[in-house]
Length: 152
Image (cartoon, rainbow, N blue to C red):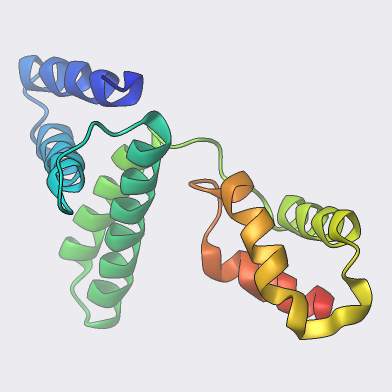
């Protein structure tokens, strides 16, 4: 079993004992998403820590987007709940990359691949090489925007 999934289960038990409703419900939701990912597809499989991190990043992004939508719709109480859930999920994700770290990684990857003169045609190569390095640590849209900026 993935160590991260095990940690999530232990944290759920601890939050239930502490009667922390927000944390308990958020961890239940995350564990359900992990289980759904395990049984998705043609054959059930055990997720690795990287796979669980991907699920966590996806769930965190959903919460941040929902908080923004609720805030735009003038529903601050629902936006605050979504932000609190996103904060709980963020505890289990690796440290996020800053904009300057993303820029450095993109520049290094472009240099390593030697695609400086290819322009936007090299976008797929660069994103493919960067994908595993930024997984769960940075939003793909932010990474793509930086790649476009440096290649364009």
